[in-house]
Structures are given as C-alpha cells and as structure tokens.
Length: 226
Ligand code: DC
Image (tube, rainbow, N blue to C red; front, side, top):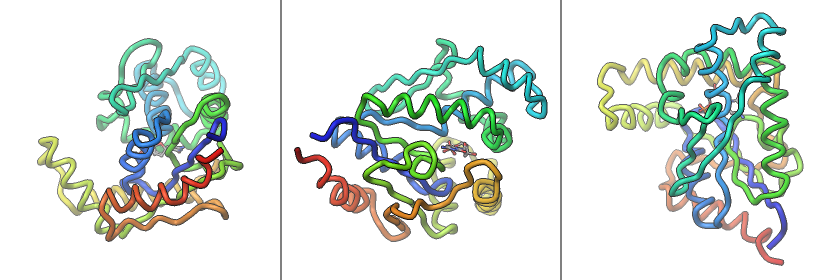
C-alpha cells in the first residue's frame, strides 16, 4: 500500500461527510480525523476561559494552553481537550453557536492546520472538514467534495435531532441554520469552503450510504495497490 495515504473530504454542513469518512476509515483500516471537532474543542476552551476572540494576544496565548488528542473507538472519533473527553459537550448549542466565529480566526486556523498536517505525515488517514483538500492537504491524492440538496440536508439533520430526543427545533429552523452556516463557511476570509479543482464531486441527494461508500472506494482503490 502507498505510504501515508490521505483522503480529504470537504463539503457543506450536514452533508454526511463524517458518515462517509468513518465508513471509509473502517473499510480501509485508516484513522478518521474529524477536523470540525478540533475547532469545536478550541471553541469550548475559549468559552470556558472567557477568551475574547477579537483580542489576538489572548487567542494566541490560549492556543498555547490547548492540547487536543483523538482516540478512536469503533471508528467513532473521540476528542480530548487537555486530557478531558469532550466529544459530547462540543456538540451542544453553546459551542455550535460560537464555532463559526472561532473557526474563522486566522491564528486559530493556522494552529489547527499545523496540527492536522502533522497527523497526516506518518499515518493513513481520512480527514473531513471544509479546507482539507484546499489548504491542509492540497496534494492529497484523493479528494471528495460533498454536496446535497439543502432541503434534503435539513430533513436529514432534523430527523437526526429528533432521534436524539430534541423536539424543540423545527425543520424551518434547521433549514435556516444550515443556510446561515453555508454562507459563513463559503464567504469567510480565511480558507473559505471551496471545492479544490481536483476534488471529485459527490452529490448524495439520491444516494444511500452504501452507494456513497461504493462510489468513494472506486476512486480510492487505485491508490491502495503497491
Ligand atoms: O464539521 P462541523 O460542523 O463539526 O464543524 C464545526 C465548525 O468548524 C463549522 O462551523 C465549520 C468549521 N470547520 C472549519 O472551518 N474547517 C474545518 N476544516 C472543519 C470545520
């Protein structure tokens, strides 16, 4: 197998990036890295420590005190913030509401990209995010750019929230939130979400999870031989 193969998956929010990334990692025995979880964990640290995002010195200093680590269990990605497991807490509203601002910060992005690149140096990984194929691993041999009909994405996300017992959010609110995040991700100054020229588009509006995996494996397999 080719050494240090990196598979980059980018795309809009709630497009099924992590589902595909986990399935691929499991099938290939690769490590799955959820780059969004890193921005979320930094956001949690900033919230807990009242870091003012508009103050570069504070941001820079805070980043020196943050150590992030991934632990993979059953191909589910678990992240620790200074040794504390925070995988659940980073999905809650306070973090979700602030992560766009934190992840748009130049100094934060610079540090996260550095750490992400380090992870891909010696291991076979599948990493998902917004700038993996453009900024983090511009030379990754296989890149996917995932998209789907916004209404379908909102319905999927709504069902997922419902299945987790969240009955307070309406489908319209989910749709609005996705539209807002798409806008923020694609228009920010630092590494906006954009398809890399050599990324394979995967529109999964009408595809099952199995079909997406088959599609992705078809494109990855040539890089697995030798
Ligand atoms: O994938 P997610 O929704 O958990 O990501 C959380 C936030 O982090 C989201 O606002 C986009 C941002 N993000 C980013 O800017 N760059 C990445 N590589 C991954 C996520």
